[in-house]
Image (cartoon, rainbow, N blue to C red; front, side, top):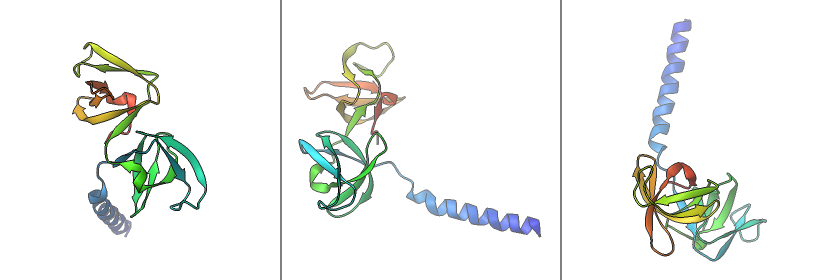
Length: 153
Protein backbone atom coordinates (compact mmCIF):
# COMPACT_ATOMS: atom_id res chain seq x y z
CA UNK A 1 0.00 0.00 0.00
CA UNK A 2 2.86 2.38 0.81
CA UNK A 3 4.42 1.71 -2.60
CA UNK A 4 1.14 2.66 -4.29
CA UNK A 5 0.90 5.94 -2.33
CA UNK A 6 4.52 6.73 -3.21
CA UNK A 7 3.89 5.96 -6.90
CA UNK A 8 0.80 8.17 -6.96
CA UNK A 9 2.60 11.01 -5.19
CA UNK A 10 5.54 10.73 -7.59
CA UNK A 11 3.22 10.74 -10.60
CA UNK A 12 1.39 13.84 -9.34
CA UNK A 13 4.69 15.60 -8.64
CA UNK A 14 6.10 14.81 -12.09
CA UNK A 15 2.82 15.83 -13.73
CA UNK A 16 2.91 19.19 -11.93
CA UNK A 17 6.52 19.72 -12.95
CA UNK A 18 5.65 19.06 -16.60
CA UNK A 19 2.79 21.57 -16.46
CA UNK A 20 5.10 24.25 -15.04
CA UNK A 21 8.01 23.55 -17.39
CA UNK A 22 6.47 25.24 -20.46
CA UNK A 23 5.90 28.38 -18.39
CA UNK A 24 9.61 28.65 -17.61
CA UNK A 25 11.25 31.07 -20.01
CA UNK A 26 13.85 33.77 -20.19
CA UNK A 27 13.27 36.72 -17.92
CA UNK A 28 11.79 39.82 -19.52
CA UNK A 29 13.19 43.25 -18.82
CA UNK A 30 12.28 46.82 -19.64
CA UNK A 31 14.26 49.99 -19.06
CA UNK A 32 13.08 53.40 -17.94
CA UNK A 33 12.77 55.70 -20.96
CA UNK A 34 11.68 58.90 -19.20
CA UNK A 35 14.23 61.15 -17.45
CA UNK A 36 12.71 59.89 -14.18
CA UNK A 37 9.83 57.59 -13.35
CA UNK A 38 7.81 56.97 -10.20
CA UNK A 39 7.30 53.46 -8.88
CA UNK A 40 4.07 52.80 -7.01
CA UNK A 41 2.79 50.17 -4.58
CA UNK A 42 -0.23 49.41 -6.82
CA UNK A 43 -1.23 49.83 -10.46
CA UNK A 44 -2.68 53.33 -10.10
CA UNK A 45 -1.18 56.81 -10.06
CA UNK A 46 -3.40 57.44 -7.02
CA UNK A 47 -1.63 54.71 -5.03
CA UNK A 48 1.33 55.25 -2.71
CA UNK A 49 4.50 56.50 -4.41
CA UNK A 50 7.42 54.29 -3.36
CA UNK A 51 10.46 55.84 -5.05
CA UNK A 52 11.82 57.43 -8.21
CA UNK A 53 14.17 55.81 -10.72
CA UNK A 54 16.22 57.44 -13.45
CA UNK A 55 16.44 56.90 -17.20
CA UNK A 56 17.94 53.58 -18.36
CA UNK A 57 17.25 51.77 -15.06
CA UNK A 58 16.59 48.11 -15.93
CA UNK A 59 13.52 46.48 -14.37
CA UNK A 60 12.46 42.84 -14.48
CA UNK A 61 8.87 42.37 -15.66
CA UNK A 62 6.77 40.37 -13.21
CA UNK A 63 3.21 41.18 -14.35
CA UNK A 64 2.16 42.83 -17.61
CA UNK A 65 -1.11 44.76 -17.74
CA UNK A 66 -2.38 47.11 -20.42
CA UNK A 67 -1.14 50.39 -18.90
CA UNK A 68 0.92 49.15 -15.95
CA UNK A 69 3.80 46.75 -15.34
CA UNK A 70 4.70 45.15 -12.03
CA UNK A 71 8.50 45.11 -11.88
CA UNK A 72 11.38 44.00 -9.70
CA UNK A 73 14.46 46.23 -9.43
CA UNK A 74 18.06 45.13 -8.85
CA UNK A 75 17.55 45.20 -5.07
CA UNK A 76 14.59 42.81 -5.34
CA UNK A 77 11.93 45.42 -4.55
CA UNK A 78 8.58 44.90 -6.26
CA UNK A 79 6.64 47.91 -7.52
CA UNK A 80 4.38 49.14 -10.30
CA UNK A 81 5.37 51.50 -13.13
CA UNK A 82 3.32 53.07 -15.91
CA UNK A 83 3.97 51.36 -19.24
CA UNK A 84 4.47 54.72 -20.99
CA UNK A 85 7.57 55.34 -18.81
CA UNK A 86 9.51 52.31 -20.08
CA UNK A 87 11.13 51.06 -23.26
CA UNK A 88 11.98 47.63 -24.65
CA UNK A 89 15.55 48.88 -25.17
CA UNK A 90 17.64 46.74 -22.86
CA UNK A 91 20.00 48.09 -20.22
CA UNK A 92 21.85 46.38 -17.38
CA UNK A 93 23.14 47.93 -14.16
CA UNK A 94 26.65 47.37 -12.86
CA UNK A 95 26.75 45.51 -9.53
CA UNK A 96 30.55 45.30 -9.17
CA UNK A 97 32.40 48.18 -7.49
CA UNK A 98 34.12 48.85 -10.81
CA UNK A 99 33.57 46.83 -14.00
CA UNK A 100 35.86 46.84 -17.00
CA UNK A 101 34.55 46.95 -20.55
CA UNK A 102 36.98 45.02 -22.74
CA UNK A 103 37.71 45.22 -26.45
CA UNK A 104 37.08 41.49 -26.94
CA UNK A 105 35.40 38.90 -24.68
CA UNK A 106 38.60 37.38 -23.31
CA UNK A 107 40.39 37.65 -19.97
CA UNK A 108 43.38 39.96 -20.33
CA UNK A 109 41.93 41.79 -23.36
CA UNK A 110 42.56 45.55 -23.62
CA UNK A 111 40.29 47.63 -21.37
CA UNK A 112 38.25 50.21 -23.28
CA UNK A 113 36.83 51.92 -20.19
CA UNK A 114 35.47 51.18 -16.72
CA UNK A 115 31.97 51.57 -15.32
CA UNK A 116 31.14 52.31 -11.67
CA UNK A 117 28.62 50.47 -9.51
CA UNK A 118 24.93 51.33 -10.09
CA UNK A 119 25.57 52.79 -13.55
CA UNK A 120 23.31 51.52 -16.34
CA UNK A 121 24.76 50.53 -19.70
CA UNK A 122 23.02 49.30 -22.85
CA UNK A 123 23.09 45.53 -23.31
CA UNK A 124 23.42 44.20 -26.84
CA UNK A 125 22.93 40.62 -25.68
CA UNK A 126 24.65 37.67 -24.13
CA UNK A 127 27.85 36.80 -25.94
CA UNK A 128 28.37 33.42 -24.29
CA UNK A 129 31.14 32.18 -22.05
CA UNK A 130 30.08 34.53 -19.24
CA UNK A 131 30.26 37.74 -21.31
CA UNK A 132 27.72 40.31 -22.50
CA UNK A 133 28.11 42.77 -25.32
CA UNK A 134 27.48 46.40 -24.27
CA UNK A 135 27.40 49.87 -25.81
CA UNK A 136 28.01 53.12 -23.94
CA UNK A 137 26.25 56.42 -24.69
CA UNK A 138 29.09 57.43 -27.04
CA UNK A 139 28.46 54.30 -29.12
CA UNK A 140 31.60 52.41 -28.07
CA UNK A 141 30.94 48.66 -28.09
CA UNK A 142 32.74 46.26 -25.79
CA UNK A 143 32.33 43.26 -23.53
CA UNK A 144 31.71 42.88 -19.80
CA UNK A 145 31.64 39.89 -17.48
CA UNK A 146 28.02 38.95 -17.00
CA UNK A 147 28.54 38.40 -13.26
CA UNK A 148 29.31 42.11 -12.85
CA UNK A 149 25.84 43.30 -13.93
CA UNK A 150 22.16 42.79 -13.15
CA UNK A 151 19.37 42.62 -15.68
CA UNK A 152 20.61 40.08 -18.19
CA UNK A 153 17.83 38.50 -20.26
